[in-house]
Image 1: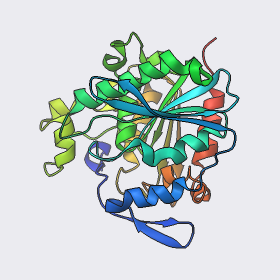
Image 2: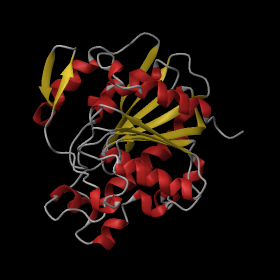
Image 3: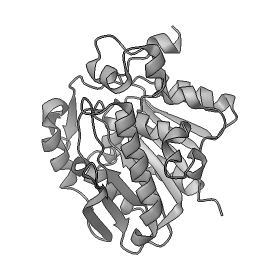
Image 4: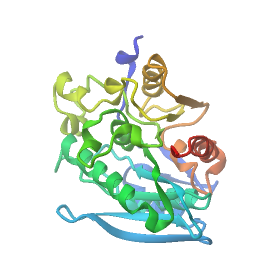
Amino acid sequence: MPFMQSIQVKCRKARLVPLLACSCLLLSGCEATLFAGLNATDQHHGITEQHGVVFDTEHALALDVYAPAQANHAPVVVFFYGGDWARGERAWYRFVGSALAAEGVVVVIPDYRKVPKVALDGFMSDAASAVAWAHAHADEFGGAANDIFVMGHSAGGQIAALLATDPEWLAASGMRPRDLAGFIGLAGCYDFVPVPDDDEDMIAAFGDTPEAQRRGQPVSYVQGNEPPMLLLQGVDDREVVPSNAISLTRAMDARHEDVTLKLYPDVGHEAVLLALSRPMRGDAPTLPDLLTFIHAHPAAR
């Protein structure tokens, strides 16, 4: 079956995932409980945190920053969480910030406006503003302004990937995709046109015609001017299937661009992200793989 016909990118079906090796929580409807449990295991020593930093006064959008206590020109990761472009909040993802900060990386986790309040232009403008803020303020947290990676999971992977492929979004702040040190995608939605007619959230985000939807599809924009990419994908993902990552990898390869695809056997949609938490770190090599990528792609000198 062709890739375009096999892509099923919805992220709404509930699944049971292990927590602390002996209990289960249903992600759909119980996210706050699940993430509170994961965040309770965070490493706090040697990390500084700043919460609720407003980066967009007009829309009352804020972000959280996690930094190594002794950071000095450290790489910076701006992380966009998933949730069907309709749900989620930055506080749930403290475990992402603390995991990377403990390894010497400054992490910025912003909120963004969601559907149905806004569509593509709204949440992409918010994402670009967050990256511009990180670029302007990186040194205040020991980060390097010329060493910024964008990273996202699921719907957040689509957001981060579009920043890295379509120059329209960063142009408003005088930046280009090539100004990014890299893009890290965790089970991201990269190749999804046409959107199923019954997918209300995606239609609200991208429109109801293939022409409109293609504007938000990262694979459509690969032209050879992209930053290096690391695509992490669970083989058993039934929410955002592996053909998304494979398609983006092929588009990058066709342009002789720097791209690394890691396919994790027996790993599903949430597990590729939750493996950054302490209780679930053995479920997938997400943390060592993304740290290897970050250190292999230092800022341009």
